Length: 203
Image (tube, rainbow, N blue to C red; front, side, top):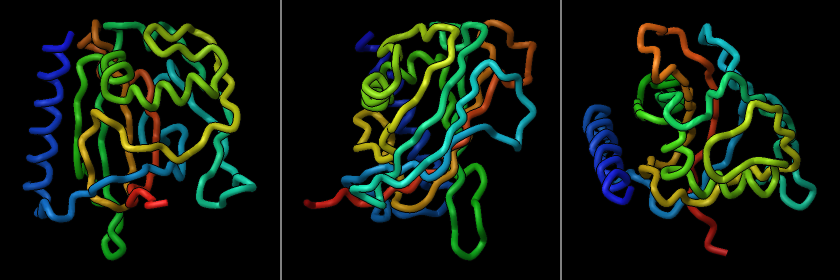
């Protein structure tokens, strides 16, 4: 498992470096210590998908901090989409530009197994969800049920194994595909996220 993780980390870093060069970015623009703040989360109207995974809800202000929104809603898992080996994923990032709008396909990251993504790349996020979502496991599989999400902070600390992005606003489409049915090209589901990557507060 350690060898597999190291291989994937190398692949992810190579993808990121390629994207940086392709988009004409300079390494000096890459973020240092950062926080990620979710500004929008839900379904992807841009894609025709099945509904094997649905995440819907609302962000609302936290009384103690207007910068740290809280998410309330639900996530519905169907047809064993989050069972090990059942699903592969592609994360398609776009970066917001104040002049030209969204820069499509700013960074595209394919994953061979969604469970690997959950357990090895965004383990910090999984730990956060397990504290705020009743019955949310830290390991696959995720059962075919509806999970209630209550007052989950929208601000996430630096993810230990995730490629560092430049500061700015990003849109991510997480597309889920059948791993064992390559002939089925229609996505099983799509999750849309809009996030801000900003410097980590010093206090």
